Image (cartoon, rainbow, N blue to C red):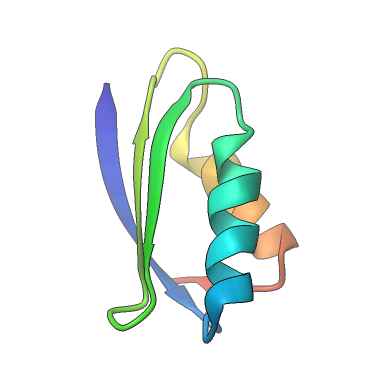
Length: 68
């Protein structure tokens, strides 16, 4: 398993947490997703043979957030 911490701008509430954790969590190969609103970070544990950081970033950006 791989771990990545993404800096995400535009998250401000519980809905943001639910949207990101729910949608990223649906990706095949994603083991865990944890959003930290205060730090503006999203920690993702994933299987690099099934999904890559680019696909994870796309899902977050499709929700209307900016990944730095």
